[in-house]
Image 1 (cartoon, rainbow, N blue to C red):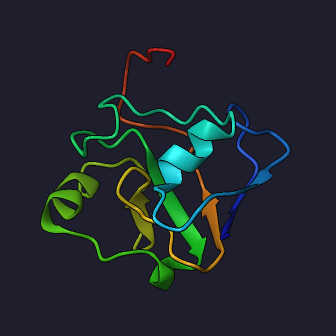
Image 2 (image 1 turned 90 degrees about the horizontal axis):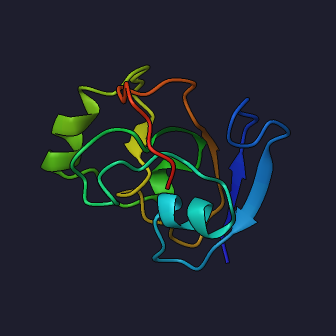
Length: 112
């Protein structure tokens, strides 16, 4: 089972964290199932950018970015060449390290 290493984030996991999840699971689903409350305003439907993450290690092990994700990523705060929407980044059999950006485009947060 691949491991997701989450770098420290002041709100979601101040000390950082590591979670495992089965291959075929999205990074967002894995974080939520392990009590890391990453924003996901569109309920994992690839319609916003609030679950944006930067994949620091293991990017090539995730599935390809499709056109709709690519279009949305253009709107993400802090976009990098290693950015993915965590609801669309599906784990394979390799570990990944991610960073959750400090900000999102969501001005009014809702708690899920």
